Image 1 (cartoon, protein in one colour):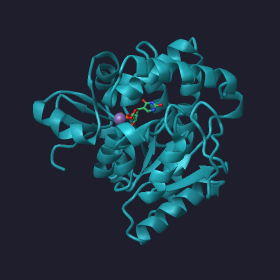
Image 2 (cartoon, rainbow, N blue to C red):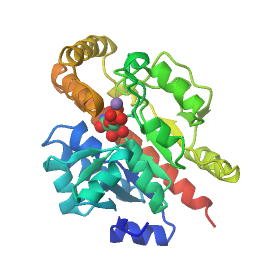
Image 3 (tube, rainbow, N blue to C red):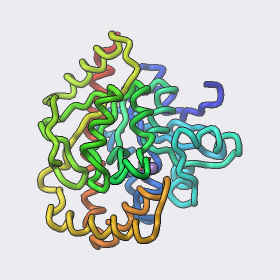
Length: 303
Ligand code: PSU
Ligand code: MN
């Protein structure tokens, strides 16, 4: 794509076929509170560098889709009121020349255009509770169904309908691999009620699955489900209580559309007195570490 901007660091790494890890920006603009978000975003980028790969945080800056943000661009995403831009919004923010933070869907989309194969996030979007009535399903899943990228996440939040989300991933042929787990994780918790069919132990196995997908000319993505470390997970009882409160509040206030996910996230952070936030930061760090290992394993396979 002609107008895709790459940072010099990302351009060099891609040209040299060195490992690159994409990072999303909606988590920075809408998923974490101001004050915490910029430091965290910088820390994740540095973590990728220290582990031997190149970070590529993705966003649209003044209408330009950008893969790999300069420091001042990252600052703008963290501190300005930018739009939350999923895939359907990309042409709009581009056409209007405004900035947008990319979701899992649009980060995957732009990273793929840049030739990046591995992506770290916190939690995936999915099917919301009550979706059989209000049809609220994140575009993350249908876009992953047609985008050849490997996304490392800590599963999906229990603010969503986890069972329905897994069914939709099956229907749309998105592969799901448990990393050292046989149970799909529930973001703040290590385990949901849903077992997984596939478990892998090593990043090299994930790279082998990616290679096999390519061989079959399959264009879909792979979801790597990476549970939050045991010593970092949230107390399940607190988690259940606070979740119910947040869902009731969203319902009471009639929150709709793309505001649902950010609303629930901040309601949970507030009700938990910041405890959920600590878990959130720890699990992203854990995902960034694994994604970096997968990107390195993938680069090692390339001729
Ligand atoms: N889950 C999180 N933090 C987030 C999001 C999800 O724990 O910030 C964001 C991601 O960018 C994800 C998006 O792609 O929310 C999904 O939003 P929606 O449900 O409106 O598609
Ligand atoms: Mn939605």
